Image (cartoon, rainbow, N blue to C red; front, side, top):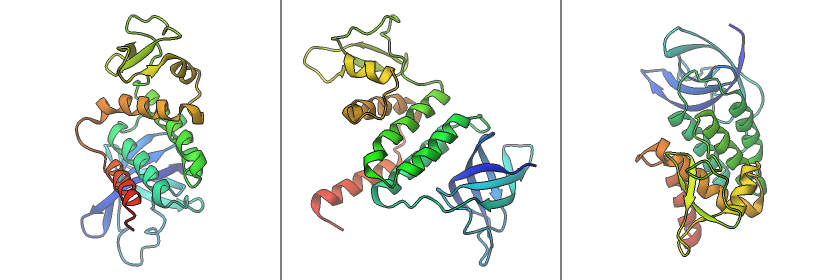
Length: 236
């Protein structure tokens, strides 16, 4: 089998010396595989199979659970800490929970690689994360459609709420929370990384992802909330 670019999304101990890994690959999307012996003391591949590190892999197996054969590092991993690290964990958690096995997602792979390059830089972090989220939603056929529930264009001066089940918008009451149609128009043109649209984009992608995630909380979101709480209270 030809070596394939990949990233580790999540791993957990499996039996005595192995690990069960969720992996994002360039051509085969998310795969689940056993890395045999990787947890053994002195294993040469243990330090390679790390999150946020570009890898080249081969595997074997016809069923849903593969067996990794070759694990090669293709350079240093992203240097992430604090909020940047939690954002990386969030991206990995989204893909582990939402991507079906073996769904080709080469565009998402590219945006994930770009996200890892951006996360160490606070000024680039939000835009890259929104681009990643909307690309994931597109891969899952769950991205917002910037029309109303009757498939009509949004009124330029209107205010709207989002209906995730229809992937469309409906008019909001005059005094309640709502999306401004002009901001939605910019997002419809692909302006997901504009600083002026950061709040609108974050709320919209969260609402679009919510029904896919269900009621089980994201561990990475809990970590971010804890980090923000510590910053507010001055606890280190």
